[in-house]
Length: 435
Picture 1 (cartoon, rainbow, N blue to C red):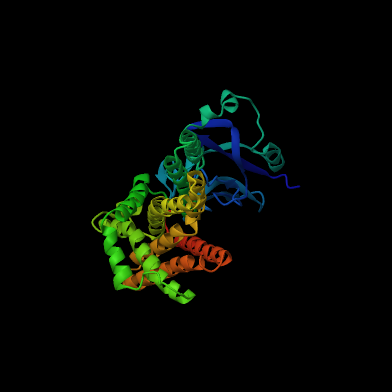
Picture 2 (spheres, rainbow, N blue to C red; picture 1 turned 90 degrees about the horizontal axis):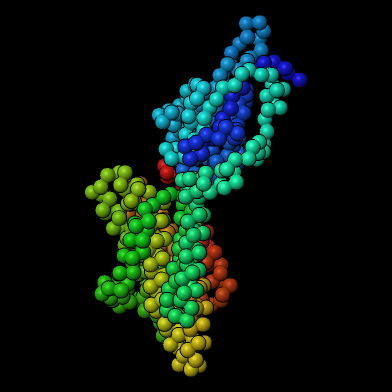
């Protein structure tokens, strides 16, 4: 065993501005230590708390010095390097560019609002002693008040958990559903809102880019307004009378229905849902780059998020304002039972809203990807927009037409649409500077 002397240092995590002296996240020796949200990193950061941290964010490396007595290298210090992270590494509140040596007491922070660590030097010890001092992070050496009541020690970190607010929201919606038992319209509205939020949150987490809640809500409400206003009549006239968007009557074939759905459902509805994306794009032309990145449309991820939000407004309006009332009225007329009709309406509502991830949100998010891409590639803007518009409209038309053929075909088309959306999100990540 090599018993040469080496210096030892520790990396301690700072939680909520306070340092817990008992918790060492890494013992530094002659090997490099990588920090990031990739599980293979020596200091793995929880992506659910710190989503802005890059997969391999920073690395701490040993500085070696030649011993005058022999040729063996000994550690004389450590230095930290930023691994081209998207949101930066900060040493004592100053952004790190490249690398720099670490001094005792230096504070390391990954991203401006990310996890913080304290670098501490220790008395030189042998490598054997250093190994004995290393222990699993889960080992508890003392019992404190904050360990017994962790809610009082987590502070702001608690609210950064990606699943805290969704859990609280779920409790709120459950209480509302209990309160609205027997009030069909309010109950349906509550459950459809909850399912829509859950479906959108899933897409939001896949994108991994933050967007103000009021922009997301505004995109959904703008689409609702368009569908409830006389503006819709202009779209209906153009796509159903000028273009062949009306559903064919009599004996029809798969192709004839697909063509009608392409113009009447695909092209028309995808254009309506894309209006909030285009409006934010145009507004951003008169605003700064920072505003476009945070609020407007500056890249494909923005287009996906706003397009999916618009799809939520479309899905809720279409389902609650058209499909559910129509089937309730039809069942009431046929069966003469309001209870059976309302139950059937609820059975229709749940799969329609839940399926929006592979339906309206998939098509709109996919088209939103192309809108964002056209902003980054202005020289090819019209080609990119045309491909995105036609492909999203075709997926939409294929979904609507498949329902007339087989539920198995419908499932296949839905799976393909969802795969297209996820592929667009993954590709958008490679363009984004915020992930």
